[in-house]
Amino acid sequence: MRILVVEDDVQLADVLTDALSDQQYIVDLAQDGEVATEWMNTLTYDLIVMDVTLPKLDGLSLCRRLRDRGLSLPILMLTARDTISDKIIGLDAGADDYMVKPFDLQEFMARVRALIRRGTTASCFSLVWGQLKLDSLTHEVHYDNHEFFPTPKEYALLELLVSNGRRVMSRAGIIDRLWPMQDSPTEEAVKSHIKALRQKLKLVGAPDDCIETVHGLGYRMK
Image (cartoon, rainbow, N blue to C red; front, side):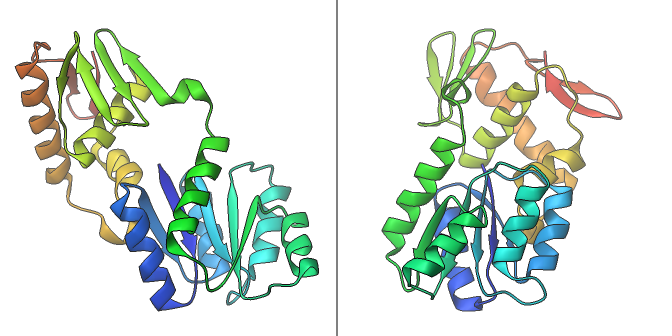
């Protein structure tokens, strides 16, 4: 799951980014509405967390712009404005939820989980490829009823490959999908994670080429 945090308060942005990353979400951070718009044009997000008061393009205008484009992803709006009329304006702009600063971090995380559940169909919680089964809620992985334990990043990589099936995923594309914009690794990191996944899959009986290398292009499931 990829989340865009749009917040110009550096301290709060760091707190939110750390809390979301600890729960294995991939988090990108934009400090103004224009940068957020550029990233929305490049990447696909499962949730946006945005402040109302932002430089260059405020949160209400950004929210309206996204809805006018037909984007239906969940939006959680953060603000210091706590009147009923302010909340109505935020919700009418297209926000799905509205939290007033300061707020409890545990409540924030609960609302994030609720919005992501609301925006995700139940069928997305379980992925199957042959004898390989992934549970997106628990991050449990089984091959032929044998459970194995990938790291969080290995799980995210396997989930990406299975969800794309026979579509080839390039190393650069994998990095764009699985790492924050501000923390992109080299393509060698992708090779290392693929190698580790293959070793773990082999230990539970999967064939060596369960994850297929398409030379010069990338990887896909076989």
